[in-house]
Length: 404
Image (tube, rainbow, N blue to C red; front, side, top):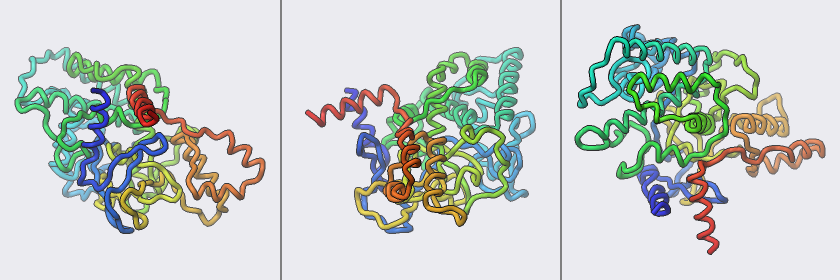
């Protein structure tokens, strides 16, 4: 039954309309095209599950807090200060409403987290005050940290809560809209089904982070804290760290503040322009399966001026070809040699995703390494990412079935 469930998932996800499928190659899930694609063609478009503007832009009023669109001042929409602790600005009523229903109301207001159709139990002034204080402490924490991961995870959990509680309304689970994240055809899978199949990095969250998030959920509606445990919280942070994309328009910005943490502790996102040029981070269900190459077959583009990711072919592709993207800036800069460029790429990949790239370009450029550099490369971590135990057991059984 479990085997059938897992196999059924990849029959339904991703939808056929995306022109891609997910296959297992060399013990790893990869994305392949299901038809011939010409260079420059848009293979698919995808909206994120959750996103977060960079900390310096969150309250600047320059970008929509939901879709990241550049704000045209007369057209901007803001909530009252009481319900807008992050000083968020929105480009439209549609973005405001989507943001509220998906995460904002649960995380940053004292409104009921249940659907409007469900009558909520009257809340006492004491309970409202406790919820407000819990939110204040979490907001203070995320502002102090200046990292995207805590807010991405909080918003992801809020989305899970919203989707799960929507099933309590007559009519059952609401299907995601076309403008929402990539779901499976038929909509029979939960957001948890999507996230559990993705790779992650083992991370150690700051000790104070989880209690702050738990308190927000608990004061919103007792029982919601069951959506997150110590292990689940760490795993979600690790999944955001491994899979989040950096959103940038054009070639990216050049005014992002310099990080104050150690280089190895700076948050990384998948972006061919480098994390330093992004305006924010976004997490996608389908694009998380794309693998890295220093000679990528495709590239993410945000040409719509929003977080909608357009995957564009870098070259002509044949049906069955694997899709790869560059997680880091792979262009050779004027002031560096091929070997120096290779070293820079590999350092960034090791810090952000804990693997040593084995693409054809890295192999070819590696021929120019000195004996000392070869020895140094031998100590590189081959792949530090993981899959959840339940998925690992299934994939191991799948391999055994193939051998038999």
